[in-house]
Image (cartoon, rainbow over all chains, first blue to last red; front, side):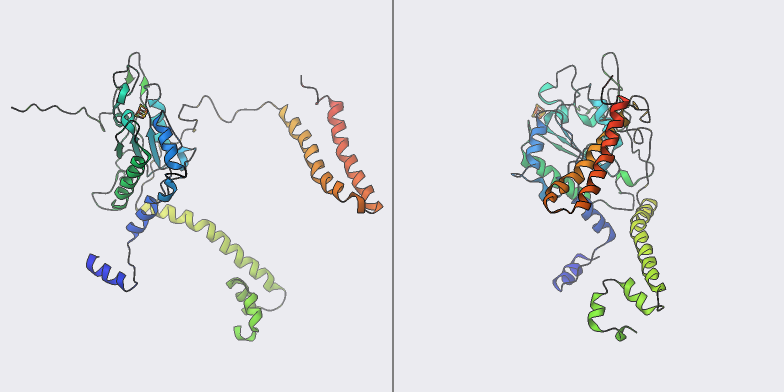
Length: 204
Length: 149
Ligand code: SF4
């Protein structure tokens, strides 16, 4: 519908909407995160959900203890290689549609422990991440910003057509392979279909 | 038809079902008509969201079950063995003995509060009840349940 016509109607007290908008509006305002913290960043996540920062204002305060009821995974903290299979399995066990926020330098890239032999260098090697939050740790405001960014992304998702998101496509996977412990590293060390090492292009 | 009812009676009819039953047959069978309508409404209320969700999944969001997704949730770890395994049957005795005390306390407390003003018959009835429950305890005692081995 034409934006001008819509605002004209709205001025007269008539609200028009589409099924898609209504659906996305409902979903984006009731993101239920998985109650799941891995390291120091989780403390900031907890702070964000408490009274001072009050994540409840965005409808995301209902931290669920089971992945079956959650639709947002906040990877808050250092993902060790010992923990990575569990994180991926939890992600797989969440119901669609599901989203991931990688919170903090550790979840994005390994952060201060990047050189560590047992630290995964970014959870996006195994599961698709929707929003990355830099910082060590990111402040609760940053988490709120990430949540709002995710809400905007959800609000812009289309139900049909070629641009529809992953969970609405029949051919896209709902599960991602869970890595296994190898003698030196996780096997496979990354999921090739969703993560590729950045290509360094030398100029000149 | 509706106008035959006086106004405060209409006000008392909380639901369409009740109004309908007044429009319908007269006599005793209308009571059951109301019940039937409520039953259908209740079933629809419960089934419609499920049906709508099915319809939504069929039209827009394909379901994507998988071996990991359908597996038992155990804090992200792979579950060890089957969840349907037998529990030690000795625990059922605990449940029974707990019930004895539980039922007893539920009735004993009001009994104690009202004790002063009770007629003799009520006291005797209560004593009989307590005896019945204590009998259960005695049975458990004689069976040696109170001693964990
Ligand atoms: S990013 Fe910093 S604060 Fe967050 S888990 Fe890593 S070390 Fe801790």
